[in-house]
View 1 (cartoon, rainbow, N blue to C red):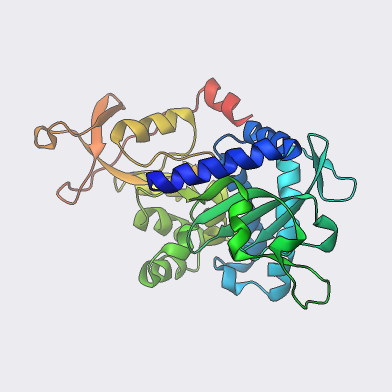
View 2 (cartoon, helix red, strand yellow):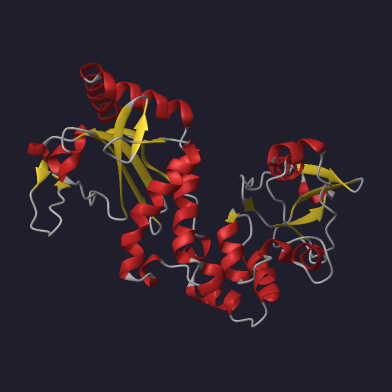
Length: 328
């Protein structure tokens, strides 16, 4: 959270920008309506980085493992995927038309590294940044003025925003949480232990065995499994993660409402759309005191700790019609 005085300054600056530029205000309000808390944009950025890493085919999980041409292509993919997600019209001269206003989209993996083309001067730019190492992202609008730009010597005449003028950016989300690239942030020992198995199924099982009470996105499962039917590695079936790990007391809820209820009731991490979480449970006993519990298979269960011996876990609730509707 920002200190009160800084928050007040940013708010005053934003109000001034909105009041002085009606077209900027119209685009800003529309983007706010489309994505009030930034969840959709964050999901697009996570999926785009995963798309570039292509872990299913390559096993890559680290931005630095990308080729230079792939990193260069990131901006185009972000532009395309945001347009697909929000249904922006094509712009007359720039990338998008939002509320009748031409808007250019610029992405950088380095904060402040947006490359502004000469044709965008005087227009609105949607500036997007995401960093997998920090698990943070930002997106904001800027009415580009030539005097706010650094005049570089690159061949295509693209310019960057001077650091002292980044306060002119009207932020939609600023240093918000990016869905985590879990593999990237594991210890080397844990990552090696997961990836050492030759079988994709065993790698997925080990992922959910070792990485508990932490949201795991489908991109991570895809990279670990390196198989086209990667989500099948998780489902209930002989040898699959939910079946194998349930015998060890570990549940793997997904983002179905019935599964989210279980995680929430136990006080565990709750999976969001496209995510899974694993955690070990134990049947509730007197020594667990007032620990949060949930009823499954007609018994009460709590989150297990190191003092609880491993015991077979119950089945997760079956998917409901509401779950199916939520996924449609």
